[in-house]
Amino acid sequence: MQHHFTLLGCGTSTGVPLPGCSCHVCLSGHPKNFRNRTAGAFHLASGEVILIDSGPDLRHQALQHNISRVDSVIFTHAHADHILGTDDLRAFNFTSKRRITCYGSSETLDGVRNAFPYIFNPKPTYLGGLVAQLDLVSIDPQGSSDIHGLSCHFFPLPHGDTTVTGIRVGDLGYATDCKGLSPRATDVLRGVTTLFLDGLRWESHNTHNSIHEACEIARELGAQTTYLIHTTHSIDYDEVSRQLPKGIELGYDGLRVAFQD
Image 1 (tube, one colour):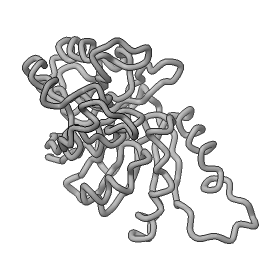
Image 2 (cartoon, helix red, strand yellow):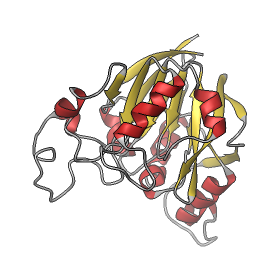
Image 3 (cartoon, rainbow, N blue to C red):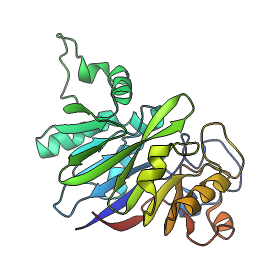
Image 4 (cartoon, helix red, strand yellow):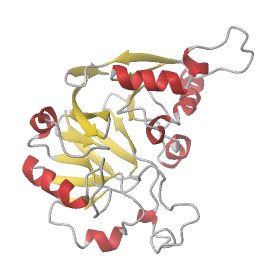
């Protein structure tokens, strides 16, 4: 069955442009040099929408890319740039009148709970408006789950002292915030048609792939097309695109691709 994926954001934790920065990328005005924090959305043929992460740009991303419903969220990890829009999920509770199921590793869900105590452990005396209505469901980052009929295969990714959850659905793979791949990730991703892969910048980084490292990973996996995500403000879309090997492209906000389950 054919579904679609939208890259809602492809930027690193600061987003691009970086406020106050006068580098040529931040001042360029090029629409593909405008990068919200990295996140995505699966649009299922049956109508459901599954978010990958709910970062601080979620409201803007939803308005910009016509996300009118959210049925579930898969959290890759609990760093601020991937969860701080969780409060904005309540807008979808308002419109759907339904709770939203959020999936993640037990470590990730603990981080989400700690970041939003008023959602998950509200005070009995709370008198404010409706908070986000969310149900947290733990997943095995080395296992698989069926989410709205979509078979999701998970794998752990090394990201400093944090373990990130990557996802393969059909012939599409998604691996944000990583430095290399785990053996499970390599096995699950091998032969994907479309790969979204962390590729922060040309220079080496302790917890993210460089572009050189990401290109080598893509080559080893045999992906037909790899889109680099979580890119920083030293990456000019046009300049870097000209230097990338065949089959490797820069992701950009609003990129939409079809995939087969």
